[in-house]
Length: 235
Image (cartoon, rainbow, N blue to C red; front, side, top):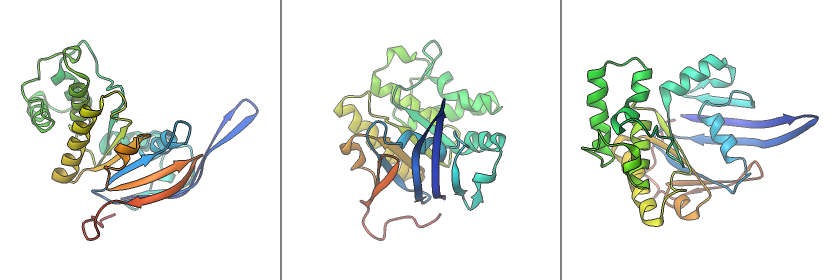
């Protein structure tokens, strides 16, 4: 599904150049549940910006379903992102003065979907994340865990090919974190949604089927937690 070959990324600030990613080689299969773990400054956010079609300025090759993404224009990157990726963030990024249903339905509204479809699809995904009946609530009336569930519902409402979750449990207590991780596992198992979680928490990383470590912009370890024979081999 995703194949990165010899990806390098540098930033220029003034007269200084900073080499952030060094010869990244990474393949992610369709239906995989992958965690990318590293401390602050390790390069993990830069890496997921490239994987999630947010950053088209890099060296190396990126094949997505065998299409050469590294040759695409910025406009093509934007289209790919809108049609293929759902994002979940640490701080939820919900709009506080509109309802849960409106928050979840925004991506469909931007995509030009009809209101009847949006209403039905929002109801479906809220049920899937355990928030049936919360359509008319405001985010501020929900707990942190519930708000993250809303964020996940918004990410999956367009039926994306893969999810990128950036420190999705970082603002949650340990018990709520377990609930959110269980929800990700359920989405991965039931819908075969490819999930990429970025974390600095070993407890979160250990729950993924595969764990990749990044340090100083280099992939240092790739650990498969899934029993042999269970992995989906479709790329």
